[in-house]
Image (cartoon, rainbow, N blue to C red; front, side, top):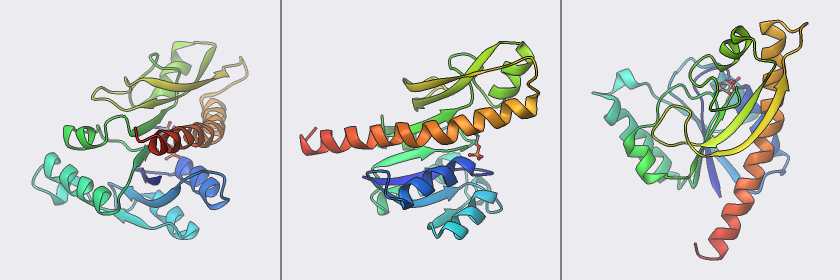
Length: 196
Ligand code: GRF
């Protein structure tokens, strides 16, 4: 299975996954990382880890559809089987969804369907819930709505600050995402060999 990671910013999840690929712990190949921002920190991480990286920005295209078409072309040229979103801050449009239906994974920093959207950690903290967590799901045409593959809870303790909660969530993400990706890759390999 040939995997591409899409990320817009910091890239700590990308780095956690890249380490696992490079250690031979994931049954697939990390082909490249793509960012929709030329100055995203994830691109520096990619360089440091020797992972191929591409970037282009929506503003360089006539419209969002043209941007996505270019991204699809890149994914197809590189024969990507599975797309892994890791802090990719754009909605996946029809162009990508129709070609990669059920083959796009996302990680979200809350227990969906609670606290979808851009600020899952802060929203849970400010609401005052005592348990939040991390969700890995398949991407559909909604915002953080696709079928859930795995979840892990994270407790919010009285001593927690927003910062300490963020830290706990990210640590959980870095552990959960590789584990789930491993299962997804193994399952996809099995399906492939059965000709499904
Ligand atoms: C993570 O919290 C992830 O759940 C969300 O975006 C954040 C990306 O963090 N989708 P990083 O760029 O991987 O550090």
